[in-house]
Image 1 (cartoon, helix red, strand yellow):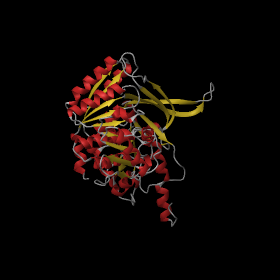
Image 2 (image 1 turned 180 degrees about the horizontal axis):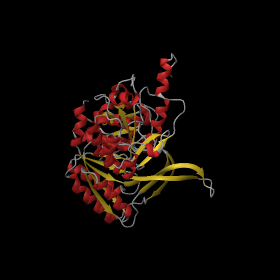
Image 3 (image 1 turned 135 degrees about the horizontal axis):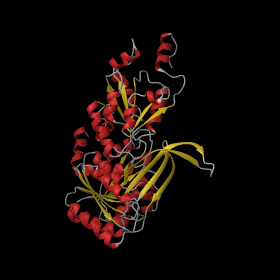
Image 4 (image 1 turned 90 degrees about the vertical axis):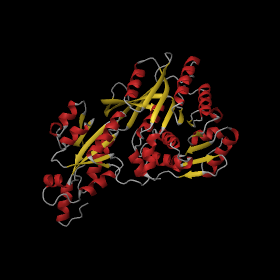
Length: 483
């Protein structure tokens, strides 16, 4: 695969139908236990919301540049209006949300201390839709089929994709000659008869087939059993650390191993897989190659905290067709950050010379990354670092320092700046959170006033004592180990 294939994903036109959710995050820190009950007290710092469920599938597609029509159901409430406002923020997203006044808009509210989830509260109704709402949904979806290359049915078991709805959608897509990808939650594979591709995980496949799936051979056998009973063209089972197995009628299986990277959070990885498959199929990529592409995208997604979206540049790096994906020129970085903000992601910023990266640096960067969706690191250029640190510094050139930072799993972007301070860069980025070490007072942090004036906040990260680049350099000069 080459870079041009990934760029062509932007040509895809995809219809996504399913359970559209609002994912809300209430964030803060826990410092004590309530005297009223043995529960932690969350000191509220901020809250945010994202498109979830089928909406997250759409967000992944939009990240590739694809054009998306999103069809779902909401209640007649304030949360529905918030969902519509989110949709309005995406240029290439057409939201077609049907209103059902007898059900609430589905909202998942997570209470977080750092990235530790304390509690999740769900507001939802999971019963089947009434017949008039089903009729409206099918009518809207059939109209959107005229502009679609691929349809995704994204089932989160919240009632939108009932049996009648699924059958009607698949029949309409087949009549229009549009392939259908189903991310299933139902217990019977037969409900998806007529689909082009079914993408169960291991547990879902085991429920469909009634057997344990613990090997390549078992995965293939279970898929073959379902294909023999149900009119489905192919099954792709996502098997976590074991990778993926694709079984098509009258073809040998394709087993794709999971990307060898640290797994941080699997939330939303299935959405990334479905979106990548759909975009690839839409532009004519053979199914086996689309699966390999989706596997690489999933590897990127699970290395990120929280609900993750994969961007073309990240996918290119994962496939080895583009190096140093996280080191960006300023304008390119600003464009990417603007896109992150359009997706509702919280952007954090910190800066430094990061000359001879040490344990204290790693601690600060990891702590910062846990408090935001994307962490941007501003890096002093060689000239800037020399003016700041004095003769003989930096020890390592900017290209080396940037490459080392970009290789860290908790750094999403590195941007160089040549000025004496990052004030100009901070003003251009407008981060939601500005991080600095706790050896500074909040009113001493460069750019802090600007960030707070724009509704953001400054956070001071506690330092690990005994770790500094200057100390390491001095020990090296004195003939010490240098750490």
